[in-house]
Amino acid sequence: MFLEAIYHSTYSEYSYALSENEVVLRLRAKKGDLTECSVFVGDRMCPHNPIHTSNYAMKKVASDRFFDYFETTFVTPYTRICYYFVISDGKETLYYYDNDFHTTLNPDRQMYFTFHHIRREDIARVPQWAKVSTIYQIFPDSFATSRRYISQKAKKVTLGNGIQSNSINGGTLKGVTENLDYLADLGIDCIYMTPIFASNSWHKYDTIDYYTIDPCLGSNEDFKELVQKAHEKGIRVILDAVFNHSGPDFFAFRDIIEKGEASAYKDWYYNIYKYPVTVEPNPGYECFAYVETMPKLNTGHPEVMKYFIDVAVHWIKEYDIDGWRFDVANEVNFEFWRELRKAVKAVKPDVFLIGEIWDDAKPWVQGEQFDSLMNYNFKYACVDFFAKRRISVAQFDAKIQSLLMRYRKPIQESLMNLIDSHDVPRFVTEAGGDLRRLKIAALFHLMHVGIPSIYYGDEKGFSGLTEAEYRRPMLWKDDETSMNMFNYYKDLIKIRKNNLKALSGSYTTLLTDTPKELYVFKRGEGKDALIIAINNGENECTAHLPIDSDAKIAEDILNKKSCEIVDGKLIINLKGVSGAIYSLK
Image (cartoon, rainbow, N blue to C red):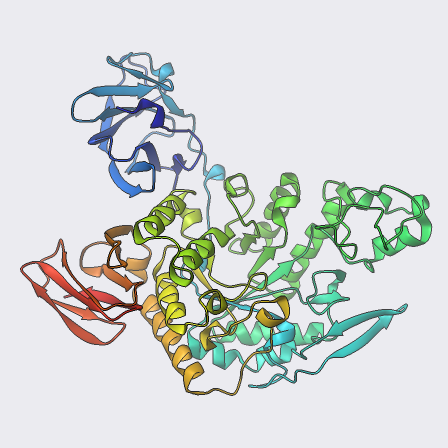
């Protein structure tokens, strides 16, 4: 056995509770090494020695480029457990505990892995509504001015003291409200809007007033109406919170500019290097990404913490929003997020909290900070495979399998999966303008584990390389191509909604045929399962896939046609750059 590859860690994605009596345990091993793996679990506080243990077989649930991952989920009557693993490669059997390997079992339970106490407070709980949602991301200035219309006219509004708010494309909150029927028709049940609070810029990430809607977008009453009308249509609303930094015209920073070291707010910002404070040409303070119009807030300061937590609570309590997406979440101190979570969950327990963290973010999703993350690693894998074709089917599957093992199940099921956002070039542009590749990426996107987030215009086939292009005005006058894309997305979302049992279940890779560029995976188990096949190559391909089912026919519910099952094998036939979703009958 390759012992150096075997890994387990307590209180992590390898050991966690789903409820007060349901536990998930995982073990990692070298790919192809172990033939058998099981775990023996006992009562850590049992008065007898040796203790009685229950044996749970572990199933290989994922394999990436280097490792296999074994997992078991079991119900225990004990609140305090200890456990050890028994592993075999078919030639040798070993006990694994005490972070070491043994040929015999030590009866001293203190040597075993331990779950000291399954405390309800430490269980990661994610709002159930979020897990089954389809999110639609809106860049407000670029979406709509009114019903099916975007003016594409810039405007400026004076806020007082020489401060101006700016708009480029003329989008408004009324425009969002008047197009809620469009979103409902598409199948959307949650919208996430980038910042809408009073700001200097059109993108609104340089906030001036956290309690006031930007006048270029509308009024506080406009927003209240938007939330009310959205809720009437079964659509939740998530706002964007910029608590890492403010705009230069935020009252606290203006006071520092005016009064220097005498300002009562000088400690509200993370680092001010010199006084008097200068904004240009070289800011004398720490900023977000060296952008002088985004001075970095000191969220560790008690007054700052209270101010912004009050902001987060205010929009939930007074406007009934359903969630927050937190900008630059990984540059804010952990304590701030922990205290914010307590405060907002006390007001609305099922409020959904999403952190903008582009890479591995395990420290933020242990159950006491965020419910979800923007899953940019998912986007990168999809671009590499579907758009650029620079990785093989096997390499793509390895990336996906590794990502599936990154977090605990409740978090994995609530990740905000995306292939586009307001911060990256559009997928279609990455794919050289090939809408077929957007379609198969969307198929994977909507059928994957987690919450699909659709960036406005993707359902129309939008392209865009630069910031101005991928934030460009919404297309409201359709042609045949945009309508085709809209109806395709609508069909995928409907299939998703109609098969939530399968899509809330397991993910199993069934086939990775690199020469044919054919990828097949299964969601769920038994009669409710779906089989998804994607041909990422240009040539038509056929495969005979053995299925573990007594089904006689298969219905391709995406392309609305029946497919053959011959001698227990599903006959897959796909044109180049296309996909199918099979339901077995």
